[in-house]
Image (cartoon, rainbow, N blue to C red; front, side, top):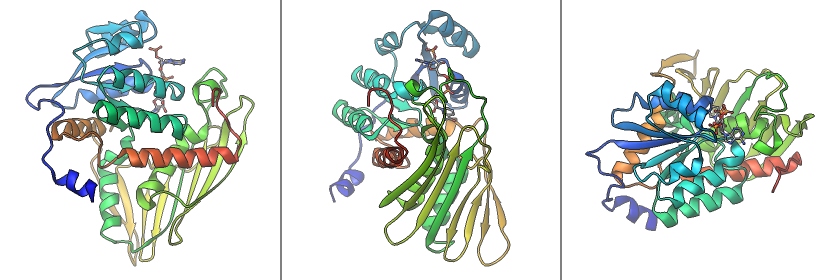
Length: 342
Ligand SMILES: NC(=O)c1ccc[n+]([C@@H]2O[C@H](COP(=O)([O-])OP(=O)(O)OC[C@H]3O[C@@H](n4cnc5c(N)ncnc54)[C@H](OP(=O)(O)O)[C@@H]3O)[C@@H](O)[C@H]2O)c1
């Protein structure tokens, strides 16, 4: 009831819609580069600064993306009073501390997936955002793609009837490199947190938080899970199966099966440009736009929320982020994977 009242109350914008949204980028890694590129597609976005652990990396990134302020530490970005919102694109093990650093410096934060190493960190991050009155969102970019908007609409309109099962996989055979963050235990590596989160979040988007979670996995020589299968059951009977791997190629497709039909999401199911929808006949292909590298849709949502006075996105609310973190914890407990410091 309180949520309904809050939702209908006029909101004060968190930022003046008449001026650009000033972004800071925390990381000079691969995805931070894609995100900087994506921001060039967002009309009122201005990338003001980039932060790195090293001046040289910050300079190189700044040169590549035309960013004038280049900081040799993540703290220096927090001290820049001209930054409205920070994109946190560091390895998983740093999301918690980096997000808190920027929230406590009164920045809004878009934090890469997985939001945190575990649910306890996720809870503290969400509570800090609320206490500081800042927007906080997990960069679950799939949810903002036109194909996912359509998928939610089809399910909500009951086009495939009641959803009974969601199956999805995400896996590839990466070369075994103990220094790469995918395989590094101290950086929060492993299949579940890196790619398993996509099928888990798809199941969460369609079915909510599971009642029961069962998982089996294989821990590799570096101590992280190289493959995992998570089976989830939901109130009323639906089941979801999420498969993830970093040393095994998987189909990377998804299927949402209902009582009256099915939606098939092609590979890679976390970034599709069409859906195959079958309702009592052969599948009909529904083409959807997919512009650029797809990462700008989530940035547009951040802008929309800031201008609408929303501290959370209704598409990727913090309650969903926290529920996903709980599911990942429950799965990880069953394969006995513990990260340093937990
Ligand atoms: N949305 C997506 O499509 C997508 C895709 C892949 C990954 N991701 C997520 O994005 C995040 C980054 O992934 P990525 O592939 O960009 O990783 P990456 O290329 O390894 O980049 C990570 C960056 O983090 C910084 N960093 C800070 N502390 C570090 C440390 N102790 N060890 C290594 N790097 C450190 C480094 O930049 P400096 O040297 O400048 O400090 C590094 O370049 C992950 O959370 C990942 O799950 C998202």
